[in-house]
Length: 399
Image 1 (cartoon, rainbow, N blue to C red):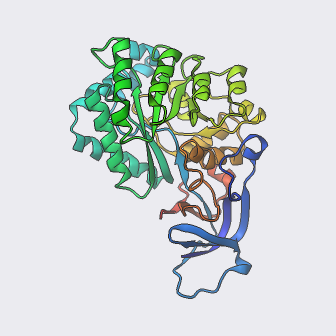
Image 2 (cartoon, one colour):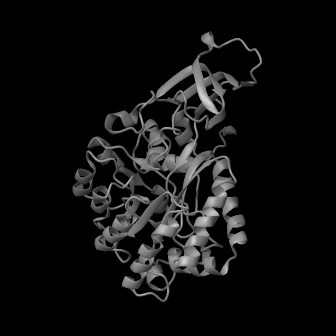
Image 3 (cartoon, rainbow, N blue to C red):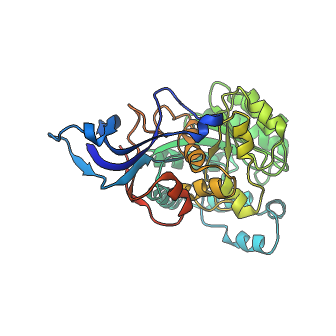
């Protein structure tokens, strides 16, 4: 296929650049009045319209002045869940905090109860509706976590559903074993940690990553270390950290080579220093800050310190019931004071890096998957964040 008459080709990155850090997070290549060719589902060539090859047997798509950009990459979601927690929405309106709802047996435990009563087929059907919604809004790659089973049968059921989704959609789907999301009902803290550790070899047959909710009231740094040691050589770490308190989760994640540390609503200079020089991508989840009234992550401080930042949706039933990555990008600009280009890199290349797929997704780069968005005419990256509810997608292109 040749796509011609592209108003703006945005997100051009040289081969070999897998993430954007520091000042580079505010830079991306943009080519106006361009063409792009796709061969075998990959970006084969691009350039100005003055150099567009004459059409021969190739299929041609006229962009009619629309923008072509890499599709969104969402590196942190919990979209496999059952039912809804809209009752807790009323609790939040009435002033209860996330911690108070959890202490009353709500939150994650409510999702666990319902998930374990729901058949695997029903769970797949419900979850697929959310995955399709995300894809319709421009997400071409997503990570999905377990963590609402909170027992061996429930966790493995979730991982099987994620694996089925992976084979059902053209989007890239990565799977994370988050058995350590909360203490399951009927377990002591120690017995539950031992259960998670014992489940790792079986989970590793289905999952790509292991995650731990290392935060106040959930799992300690010591718990996290034990789980990550057990998963060594089987699953790559990703960590929930510093959502509710400065937990030490960032430091233990970096120590164990975590691909990302996620949430980071509450961080100090110690976390920034720990991340310098590491392979770990700081990933912030503004949807949770928006929905729970938490502080927004200090993305600008991280970038000024030379780090990169990814943004993800945290799509889940209790603290961020939205998987619209365009809205995430807008929050990065409006609430976190990122420039549109900084936010764009955070929801494309850097979020792809946080899933280990930035060699294939997240930018306009020769040889990468042609997982692209074609907008209606007149759009650019600034308008994308500014008019954050105006429909902009003409077509989602997935190989």
